Length: 194
Image (tube, rainbow, N blue to C red; front, top):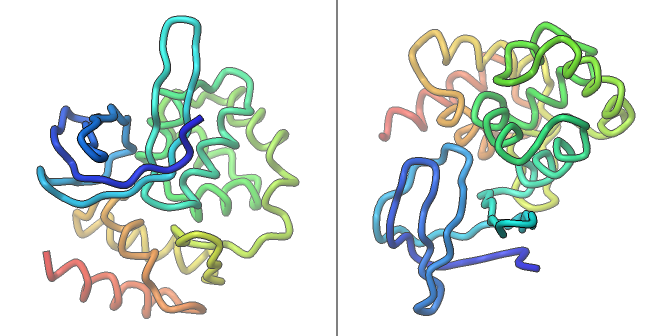
């Protein structure tokens, strides 16, 4: 099974890329990240095997990869549904919703109705209980940023027109223990570069 790939983005097809790894092209489904042709990229890989296909799902960070695998354990959520969910919510926001038993947030996610949201809350309620809320953490690094601060900062940045993917990407580099105001200032400074 493939667990990690590093190479160059050779082709881009919407939510799929072809990653050139030493002259071999791997077709990888991605969760909304932006890439340009020729970019160096590395991914945690989930190899999804079905009777008729072997699909690779790639994630730039470990937190998103781990959440994807947890979502697959929920009855009724397949790989495509899990990817659609991850395009709309960061791991930190998802963990906060589960920890707070926030049915409303979960039912706003694509393909998640009330019953699916209740199943998620029931099956994952103990998964995140003792973990610090972390924004898109790199590898095993945990950033203990208050989930309320993340929510408030995300809402403010969304109102300014930034996408959840842009916001999540910026939050992965935010200083630990940032409050809402610090998160917003940090994000605006980082996003203004683009």
